[in-house]
Image 1 (cartoon, helix red, strand yellow):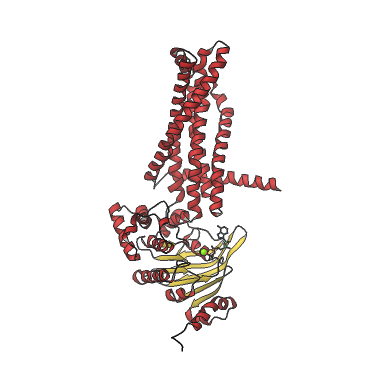
Image 2 (spheres, protein in one colour; image 1 turned 90 degrees about the vertical axis):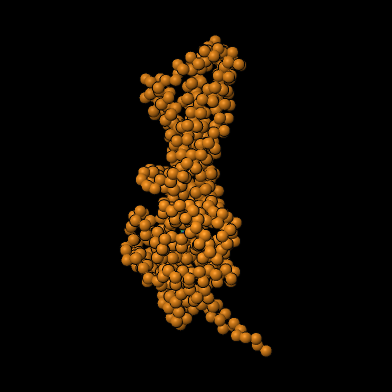
Length: 258
Length: 255
Ligand SMILES: Nc1ncnc2c1ncn2[C@@H]1O[C@H](COP(=O)(O)OP(=O)(O)OP(=O)(O)O)[C@@H](O)[C@H]1O
Ligand SMILES: [Mg+2]
């Protein structure tokens, strides 16, 4: 019985999320577009996450470089570190880590903000004033993430690769030319496509999950608390799941471009 | 101005309103009385189109809006002002921005012009101009209600005003201020008004048309005389404390 109810709720959530995404797309076109809100969110979501993403990239890049330089040295091929870094960072770590960090930082905030507006009838008040809350609240956050997450991912990639370089040159004693030429070898069209498509998918997940959970909050303050914790968990799990699905379904078709 | 015909509404399987019909003419005020959970707030939300009835029809200014699309409803709603139970002020905006919300969203007025309008409304509400830059959280309950009323009337010429328990839980003086405010608005602007309340004394000061709601059904719809003379059991029960208090008010010092 319990399983059946859980499954029903799951199906309901998927259905609700899908309808919500469709609405968000529909309200993305046409007027009014809340530009000021959009700029605020770009600043808050983007600039506000910059430091976090730089730290993440730096430490993750250095850790990976350390691990692989030792492993590769055993095979006498430590000069290949640049290749490993290109693949690991551009394809996987950059996009996934950036998305997870941004999700942790912003998705609970988005859900809590919208959820508490819902529970105090502020969303109803907005609609009573002839303003569509999805257009006003969800759409600006969605597009701000769609623009800022890819930018943050590029920054994270860059910092991680520089971090790897520092480890390569000063700890593993690889020559700078060997690191860079091996790295450039693997910056292929395929890897670039994989690395740039992912952040858009992840931005869509963070925005739609966190906004949807905010809008579907019920049950007062307790409900807001519940959907806020759900929000971080659901966006993170979905990011990891979509990352896997993408790697499984799309990446094989890009083999020719690597 | 407002007409509901045979409205039935349920949240999931729980019926909330059953066969509710009534109308409010231009410039008229109607008070909805009824105990907690009887569906009063729901009626206001149906009038605004925030929730859709399962059956029945809603007419606003002669137009059938029962199945109107969200875009059309947004236009209709701009003619209405709603004061939500509990205020529902935008808590991330200042009092000034709350009051100017309609003008900010729907007009091209300059910020200075909107601020000026907000100042005038604060005056009208009997609130200090110093509140303009204060956040709603820092206000007392009575002030919040008044700001909520200000936000609702700031729309350009609202023709319909809906108040959801504007005086519940307030002290007698704040209550009086708000009652006067509601009357002033009706007299000065000739708006059609619906007031939801539990407080019968205030109800008599604001209107002469009443609806009594019980378990989602209308058990009385008529004027003051009719209400006081009504034999319906629930209406009598509802009025009992009021009638008792009227009789027991001392007329003067008794020796
Ligand atoms: N969002 C909701 N989901 C489910 N049921 C609801 C919801 N909102 C209200 N109800 C139910 O609908 C019924 C009527 O609610 P409504 O808010 O209209 O009552 P009310 O007359 O305004 O009461 P009060 O005087 O306490 O404000 C109640 O039984 C309530 O439990
Ligand atoms: Mg109510």
